[in-house]
Structures are given as structure tokens and as C-alpha cells.
Image (tube, rainbow, N blue to C red; front, side, top):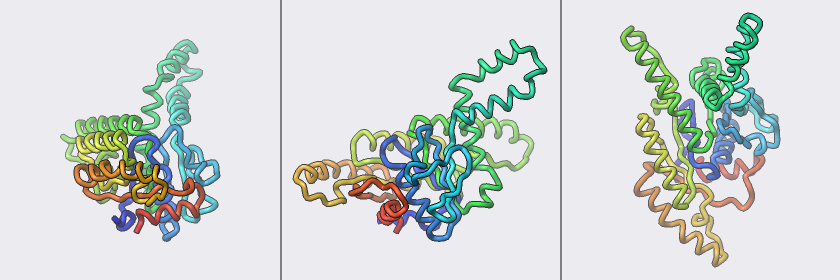
Length: 284
């Protein structure tokens, strides 16, 4: 079993297909690190985030300390709230200055999905470059949105990097972009989460290829909710466990440089004690 939670860099990302258990693993990791004395910020970029539900509290779009876990705080990036703040920032200064018809036209132009994606991008990249965040927290753990949303953020981050490099390159001025943070293995560790099933493994492999094209090398894979390692006694469950073996073999031999296999939990990992129990399967 890999020791996944040793010598961690500042940023740790759990990424992969929706429904594979990224949130549970990210929350378990956050609890484990905070319990060891680290100051941890747990961030969800998923529009349908349920991090708050895992801990039985409301988090929202601001840094919120967890009452149940000292040294742990949470933040859920709300794309709609971020988009509204973005619109207010642009429209606010011209309201009352320009004709109302012009202001309404600007608001309409900023009402689409593109504005929401841009606003979410700014929220995300601010966390990667904010000096206060880096000072106040030893680790920032990202529970990312499903693959499609994550790739949109990655595309926007890459475009921002290329434009910054184009503008700053000739000047000789040193600069660091959010993409450079993601590409630096000393600052960022990427964990791909999957299930021992054909579709999740194929999607995870595609995600890994997309990351590598952006010069981001995933550090390891976690095969979550495995029946094979849970040693079921039911004949039906034993057959399903046997069906997993080909996918586990594909991950360990074809895709992953490092991996852990986490057994299916008897109880849903909600609450601090269950999260601690979950973390033992891949933390040490």
C-alpha cells in the first residue's frame, strides 16, 4: 500500500469522473492532515458540492472553519455566486454613468455560461496564487468537479498561461502562473480517483492523457470502493469482486505509476470518525 500522505506539497488535487468518491477521499485526507497538526483548507470546485453534507454543516463560498476538526477550514466555489460578483464588478462602476439601456446590454452579455466559467476560473486560480492562502495553510486540498468541468478549468488556465507568457516573455521578467503551479510536482500533487469498472477507468485514462498534454503529471491513482479488496462472503458479491480484477490489473500495469486500492466501506463515510477510518486505507 502506498503511503499517499507523506511529504505532501502545498496543493493536493483529487480528480476524476463524477460518482467515484473524490469528495470522501478528499475529506478523509483533510481530516487526517489536520489531525496530524497541519493547517488545511479543503476546497470544492464542484457546482454540486456536498462537502458540507459530509461534515454536517454549511460551508458556502467563503473560508469556513470546521467546528468538529481543529485546523481544518472549507470553501465551496459557487460558480453562480462567483459569476454574480464578476458581473457586479464590471457593471457596478458604469451603473448611473452610462444610459440604462447600455447597462442592460452589458448585463445581458454577461449572463451566459461563458461568464460563469470565467468567474469560476478566477476563483480557482486565485487560490493557487494567493499569498495569504499559502501563508495561512500548510495544505490546500481540492475536491474537483467531474472531469468535464475540471477540463474546462484546465483549458482556461492553459489559455491564461499562454497569454501571460506571450506578454511577459520578451520583457525578461520572471513570472509564475497558476498553470506553472499545477505543473510543478514540488508544489502540486494530482491524484486520479476511479472505480474498478470499465467506463470509469477509461475516463480516468483519458483525463490522465489530457493532463499530460498540459505537462501535468498525475502522481498516483486511487481505485475506490473496491469489492475485491473488501473480501465479501456473499457468492454474488464475490462474483462482482472477481469482475473487478481485470480493471485493477489495467490500472496497475498500464496506467498508474503508483496506486492504492480502497475497499468498499460498510457505512457511508460521513462524519469525522468514519472519514478517519477511510483515510487509514491509503494514508499509511
